[in-house]
Length: 639
Image (cartoon, rainbow, N blue to C red):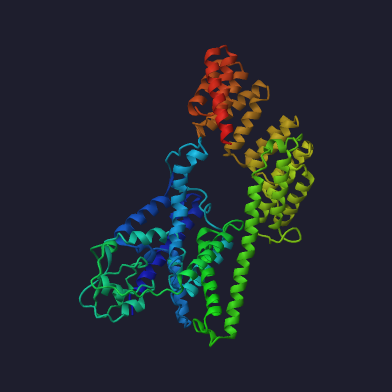
């Protein structure tokens, strides 16, 4: 019996307490240190943003290369969940058996490469060829956050996640089933464990009693490995120390020495690998794992960690069902599914459950495939949104019309009956929004508006849907209706900054600049720190033609520059205001400052060139305008 369990449980509970304290502090303060979540490292590799999660993960990887896979056993909340579920099952008389698959062992490594290596490889080796003008990311630090939950799934996702990755993976795959077959972080921890000099080692006092293997919850044959190598070499060892505690001879200890990859067997190890499937079956079920994983990663957007757990469980169900077809006797826990070639009632229940689960995955996968193909078809629609919603749109060519129609037909499959074969979920509104845009491309503005209004009546009006409805009105040349709709909704939702900005543009196009200014002023009262609204107000004031309002607009721009002093577009806006006020000296200084801050921006350089041309600095202006034209040509080619 191990005496380490309660100690490890105590430490894991302390870790959970710290997590809860972190969340409480954020709820009180509204800002906190970034999540200690390894997945935050993806932002670092993709965008060069060094986060707390990246530094935390880097520290874990380094310590694992020295101490072995310790964090999994002593600091991971998913391990705590699996241990708790295993403890409950043991109390209920259920003892899950370890599922042993050769190929599925590689899923964590594949997921780790997909999460952390692929983004870096894409940026370094592929993006320079496909996106030549992609800027090189500058390393920045993001140690605190104001939106703690931005990268986490919601509560509705957390419950099934805990059920699948906690209870189901343990029940089907064994005590550390998710760690073995689903965890992408383990995909790095496991191979690094091979390098670690710190390991479970053995003295000559060992008499091969097997107590160590009996208490190991990581499915490691401890007694055999210490006999063959003098240490535990299995990558699944999480250094929980249960085996050390349970040894009646005190023959096991945690110590430093030769790492696993250099270990030489003390005796010739027995070639007696116990796998549950033949290699042919492994290959077939690897296909099942891939299909199940991708079936739930697209439209429904399940978190990657959850999708991997679903895939691992699907493999087990498919394997056990195949066993019932191909072998005369099959057992699952205490249930005899099949005996002497005859299916028992429990076997039929198990087979039916498997059919339902796999059928559901096929169904969701089909819906996901429809959305993926719809998105690819919609890539053929190249008419810009500003043209679609201009009020006098250009009729698309036949190729674009065909692409839009095909995308609409495919998206429709993902909608609930009677339109499609899907079901309502958090993804439905996104599908409807994309369909409404494609309807507008085809000139069916009224149909697009009806679709958005139906979505709003079902799920409540959101800022994005309100904007879409206004755009459909504007697109069918009813700018008056769009403006009235915008003013009405802004009065009811003063927190919608982006919608207020769009409405101010509609009012301005309608000729109601005073109304646009009044609307932005009212919205700013509710959102006094909004830079976007300040910028819109400054532009409206500066373009009014009134000297007093222009002076106020310049003051507003001055204020935005105290908040964001390196914004080149703010300097361009202020330069234009000074130009209109005939203050050419200050205007030239601001245009040049903008060009210094954004030397590769075609619009900024073009503004400087045009201004210099207007004050007779022709030679310099010509060179700058030529450079601006070359940049715009490159930008057009990249698109």
